[in-house]
Length: 461
Ligand SMILES: [Zn+2]
Image 1: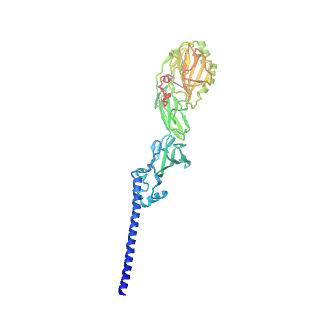
Image 2 (image 1 turned 60 degrees about the horizontal axis):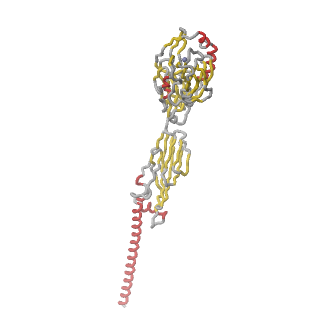
């Protein structure tokens, strides 16, 4: 009985031992399998998705030729044989946090400073192979773009300020999907500036008032007692010039020039310096003098026809460089600004130049322009006035015949008339004169390209 009981206990102990051993073997084998799976997963990740060898390199779009760097990357999803495709990102994040964003963290330097520009336009250039979505919020806080972009996107500012933009690039490859976010700003801050081409000018010169950076075309105005002129566009966008005459008889000293651009007023000053002019003693037959210079009717007719033209200015610039001399083979008989005594009495300052040459010598337009007047006047004979823009005009007197009519457009070098001796004239010559508003300037500075009339023009010479 005692032996039988012992045997039963022994058998029971053996059974318990067997069960325990079998259980331990099973547990051990299960743990080993878990470890194997885990090792395989890690190896797979390290081989394919090591941080030093990212599957998805961050693409580099550009704005204003500046590389954009991603400010964030999300849902960098890897496919892996051991795990459901869309689950690996969660797995990586929860189990291997050091691998989260492993494809992009290596080189990210988020850009927080706005990109600065001085032109009212910027362009986003995209790398190839991505689906791109862009939103642009303008300086007023209005979303001006929200949509897909192919290759590039160009935006034009309507005012100074900062555009706030978000770009998302998505890529799908055999290895998985990636999404990169770029947050960037583009800032435009350009204020118009006003400068003078020179602070000192001699009698007969031209002083240019140059405006730059007026890229939104704010209204401009200019006021000076030196003369009437108007702004014309220059070659650089946002740049304008107004050409102020300093006539031969302007007093020496400081002359103010008031300029307004938009709401901003600028007060400038030009110092006029003395220039020496020659003196001429001329005799003319009393009958010619009486029918022209001394004739009230001739004077009245001239003023009625010509004076209103002084007030005409336009914002177009027709001249594109130095003026050519309107006649060739001439002899300069009366200089600009000269003091003239006629028949023994002081009569006038000469506001143009007299170019003596043979009767019938062809006369050329010295620069591009529009004919404002072409007709016969008792005082000046056959007379032509050409507008070159901005209030600048060429005047031609005493001609034998004219080839153009008011309203015609003329090009530099085009024949407009022939030399004569009509009106207040003692012999065949061309009286050529350049006026800005009602003020006469030195024509020779236009021929040799030294005039302030060419300041701001790239084609000057
Ligand atoms: Zn003259």
